[in-house]
Structures are given as structure tokens and as C-alpha cells.
Length: 246
Ligand SMILES: Nc1ncnc2c1ncn2[C@@H]1O[C@H](COP(=O)(O)OP(=O)(O)OP(=O)(O)O)[C@@H](O)[C@H]1O
Image (cartoon, rainbow, N blue to C red):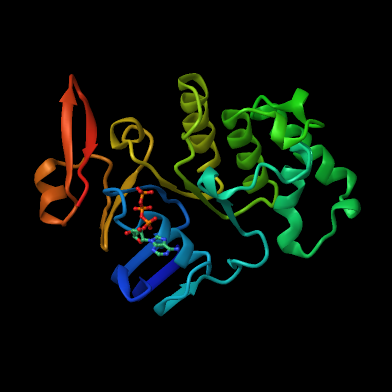
């Protein structure tokens, strides 16, 4: 089932195009990696879907999917999050419920339980009362994952979720995402095609224009043909990417 359809979507910043004429469908069973060179427009694509940047063209959402009610969970790139804000880890997680226009002090016991379960899954239960200024980047990333999940989204969008995360949690994270994919679509921006390729089911190349590959097995020729200047370097069976600036 189609969850989100973009029709001829373009985004410009101060007159400079970041995305041009993008037509793309996202489906309810997707586990999709969004890849592309630095500055290619990956974050802009995600922000357009979330209504965070003005765009021309049309974005359609399936019934029951909205950017306003928590049915789309979002883990932003961490440099966009203000760590000086004086709230605790648990409050960060609860803030994922705010799109439902609920106030923090009205959190139900079920929601508290859910937050506790998510924090336990992400390995940050002991940190729940700590201020976010006093935790590490990787711990913050885990908290933001819980925040994105607490509203039980049907679509989970993650922008570079493995920034700041150690190898152990990176692997854990991909496994958590693979199991969540039974009940939600997952769209993940990543620089590292080599690592994500064994988890994702499809790949979207973004370099001002967009091309969707309905496979996780992608060749350098395909990347070149679709204006995606990423080099694949193979070590054994695992391709690694080197991203070219342009
Ligand atoms: N708020 C903004 N104002 C002006 N230009 C912007 C803004 N945000 C992004 N851009 C520009 O738009 C282009 C696309 O940026 P975007 O962040 O979407 O790329 P990206 O593929 O996510 O990059 P990266 O891999 O470096 O995170 C870049 O040239 C960037 O400099």
C-alpha cells in the first residue's frame, strides 16, 4: 500500500534548487535507504515529506497517515537538536507524543510504561532522569529513536541515525529497525550504503533528482546511470561507498 506519494516536488533555498521535480512513492512495507552525495538533497527530501520546508508540487498521504498526529515518526539529524534545552532523557522521549497536542504532565501510565520499554530496548533506561546536556551523543541518538517510536508511527524516518553511535549499537539499531519493519515503513538516510545494504529492501538515490531502486543490490553502473555519483568499493562481498562532492 502506498503511504506517501510525491508528485513533481521541487525545493529551492534562496533560488538555488536542492530538489528538482521529484516523483516518488513510499510503501507501507518499505525498508528504504536514502543515499546520495553530500548536499544532494537527502535531508531536504525528508523535510519536504514532513512539511518542514516549502515546496512546489504535491505530496499525498494515505488515509491514516499525517505529519500532524504522530503517525510519522522522525529521528532528525542530531546537529539540529538543541542539547542545551533543560529537559531529561525521559522528557525527550515523551515529547514524541506532543504532536497529539498532549501536555507532558498528562502522560498516561500506559505511555510511561511504553517509554520505559523503549528506553530499556535502546539501553538507556538508567539514564531516564538525566538532563540531555549530560549524556553522550550516542545516548542522545538512542533517546531520539525512542522519541520517534513512542507515538507508534506507521512510517519511521531516520536521518543519519548512526552518527555518534558506536559499532555495537549501530548493529543493534539495524536489527531493531528490521524487526519494527513488520509493523511500520522505515526510511533511513545514510551515508553508508555498504552497511545498510544487507538490511534495507530498496534504495532511493538522491542527487537533486531522485531514483528509486526496488532492490538492495545495486551496481556502480546503475548508480552512474541515475545521476548518483557514489563509488562502490567492494571488500569481499560487502560494497562500501565513497561519496564524491560535487
Ligand atoms: N536552510 C538552508 N538554506 C540554504 N541552503 C540550504 C539549506 N538547507 C540545505 N541547503 C542546501 O541545499 C542542498 C541540499 O542540502 P541537504 O541538507 O538536503 O543535503 P544532504 O544530501 O542531506 O547532505 P549531507 O549528506 O551533507 O547531509 C545543499 O547544497 C545545502 O547546502
